Image 1 (cartoon, rainbow, N blue to C red):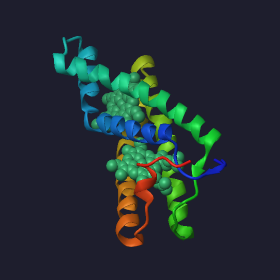
Image 2: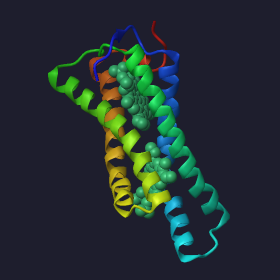
Image 3: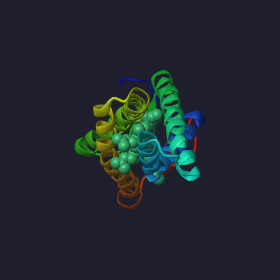
Length: 166
Ligand code: HEM
Ligand code: HEM
């Protein structure tokens, strides 16, 4: 996505990054509850209270992630992102691919979930589940890259997502 270059991420961009990251971790860690809820509803049995609460939370948190991601993409288009801290053609390519795939997952994950849950589209549910390991791998790669920047390249990449720029 082409966009203007800025000195750093804005407070809103930084806030959205961390709120979305926390909500995605919640979805991944507690994703099983909605499966239990779906099974109980299909069987016509009464779900346990925890299943009911966490199952429904999965739906609402997912919808919030979708809304916040759209807001984040609008900010990214309007305000831009800072130029990369450094790296060669390979690592910069990897960074672009990782960030791009994150945005794709942040949109496709809630959309497939909604199709599966509200319209009973079976294939959408399969796709939704299949994307879980991709998301986990991507997060691991992303965190490793941040550690790599700190320890090996010794640059301030982490600070860019903590302190707003102009
Ligand atoms: C970014 C947002 C989301 C993430 C990261 C996410 C993540 C997950 C994960 C990790 C699972 C468990 C998969 C497994 O253990 O194999 C799951 C299951 C599920 N999620 Fe989501 N989810 C998101 C949004 C949504 C939304 C908005 C809905 C729908 C309202 C939804 C509906 C479902 C359903 C129906 C299942 C069970 C799938 C099945 O049993 O076939 N998800 N989700
Ligand atoms: C503890 C976990 C995490 C850490 C330490 C972390 C750290 C960072 C840092 C330092 C940047 C700025 C990179 C730069 O300026 O070049 C960044 C960008 C980004 N992070 Fe994370 N992150 C984490 C979790 C996540 C998660 C879970 C997601 C996905 C939901 C995510 C998605 C992104 C995206 C899409 C960008 C690019 C922002 C843009 O330029 O548009 N991060 N992250």
